[in-house]
Length: 277
Image 1 (cartoon, rainbow, N blue to C red):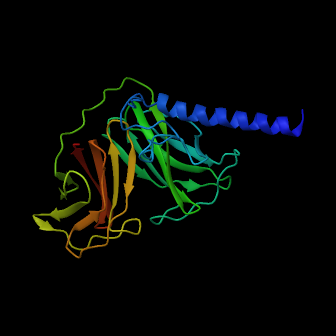
Image 2: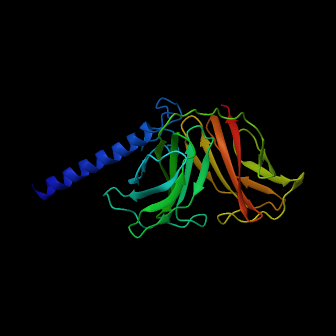
Image 3: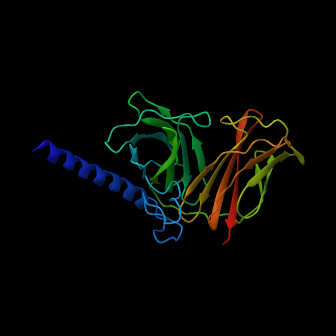
């Protein structure tokens, strides 16, 4: 076989691997609707906007390759994955963003369970972390990272086999309670959002940095689990206040997960937010 034929054959095989990985991720996430007007096909964009993040295992020639897509429900196991380039080689160099080189967010399909993990990189270039899927059902894992100055989010479906009963999305609310803290969401239906953290009726002073910032926010669209990781705006100086540039922009229902640090611990407050046309 000539060198030219071998190169063409390898390129064709790699294209099949990329397509199979993307389809596998969709197959394990039965809640994704290919006909949702806001969903985009993997690797493609609407004519008027870029495809939302987190809908595919591949982007810009990079591919998320999990070692497994099934874990036993209720048991802590190891979840490992690599990021491969379009030649099939493992990507090893990642930028440090928000104090970490890799963020792994894992959510249940009904958005009732949220985990924000920080895997460690092995000498082979693979990333690994302990992971527990609390109940049987469908989950989605997002590898959120930056390499070469470009930020990307690749995602794959995970499955914990067994009978599953999805929980309904909680009704929209501007208040949440977590670990003895009261958190209030301020902001219009679309655009910038602001949170106030209080305890005992008073705003909390002295919020501590978390991942190099005042807080951390992930917004997930309920219809297709499109992902948005939002960095906080500069601190206003108001006690207990954390502001972000946005948290969902297209019409739909979103689940927001705000993380903040106080008293030496990280706390997570969850909100449902609905954006209408």
